Length: 233
Image (spheres, one colour):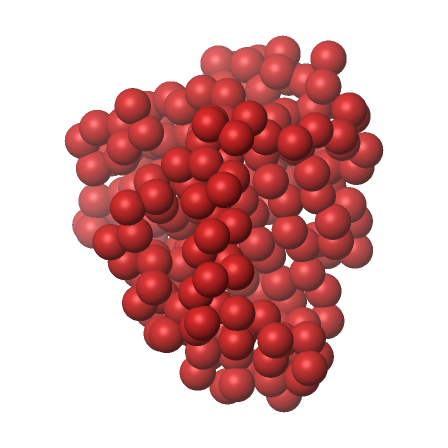
């Protein structure tokens, strides 16, 4: 069986927002003992459509990579972590993902390696994209100065179906996970948006990142709701 990845988003009522921060600390030892879990990161979120400097203290996330779908199913059904999310969170929403391609590292490791077999997405199917980076402190202001112009090109984009901005360390370790109508639509935006193309150029020329990762996935399934419905149904 091939490895799968999951992104689980948990939204808490404002009066219970502190539980999200508590879970970030308390669940790390629990995750270390989960069978079949290859990689996991507990994440905060931002209020923007992608990278965001404004935190959302009511929304938290777990990104994980599993040996196979059976390991995820056991975790979803029986783990203390998921039980806490379901009983204490207002909403829980999970994307199940099959890695298609990946390059780069996250915390010094390649979480999806090997992607077997390497595959190109169905040109007519939705594609999920993970972009993650550790920003050099000396380049942080430069990085954040470019966020708003790129963010503006995404808002209302007809082919962007869903997007989450997440992070491990505020302002320095950031990631976005976005769902696009197709791989072609994602590439059109990435290469034809002047704001995004300029940001990519500056990233390379000025060496903004000490570590980065780019990965693409096939969307296998969604579970739960987000703001009352499944936005990808």
